[in-house]
Amino acid sequence: MEQFATEEQQVEAIKRFWKDNGMAIVLGAVVGLGGLWGWRYYSETQLENKAQASVEYQQAVETLPSQAGLDNVDKFISSHNDSGYASIARFMKVSKLVENNELDQAANTLEEVISTTDDNNLKALAGIQLARIQLEQNNFDQALATLGGLNNDAFSSLIAEIKGDVLAAQGKPDDARMAYTKALENNASNQLVKMKLDNLSVVTGS
Image (cartoon, rainbow, N blue to C red; front, side, top):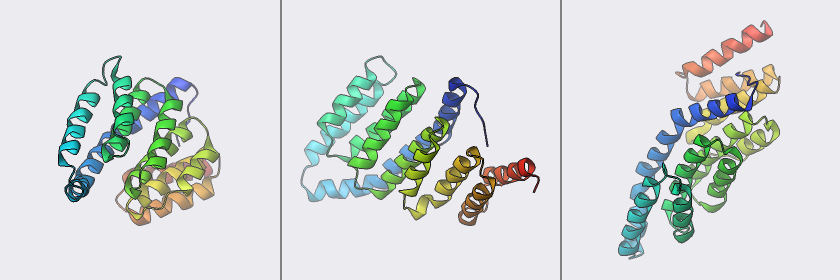
């Protein structure tokens, strides 16, 4: 398990995690849920409004690199909080907040996703990201509580892996080993988890 001596190292670790996982998660959610949202929009006969929301979403996230980007995304979320786009916009906001080293705000935004969406996949995605941030901030109990509240078979391997990371950081190698083993049971080809197990054996001499 990585150990970080400074806040800067912690932030860089979160940035790497988001770069490796964040955008793929967001894009996967968009693709996977797009059809569902589209059907709901048809059934609710609100195509014109939803099309406008799509345009406004695109305009808002395109401004994220600018200084006013976060404000624009917040305005969009406030105006379309009852749409699926609001959750995706929050994920994009988190990416920018992590880039800006604003980890507390990033965590708060992920908690908003969890509390506002009814979609179990998005709840799991937000919880995974939130637990990772809490881990790097050394908020171990909070991270375990966040992971414990997730119930989604599609992400069970990743949830177990991050739980192992938390337990390893807490100095609980036996518990971490159990979590990593569970992660491999659900994804036997995960080489990173295998490396983490090997590292535990080196650290503990077992």
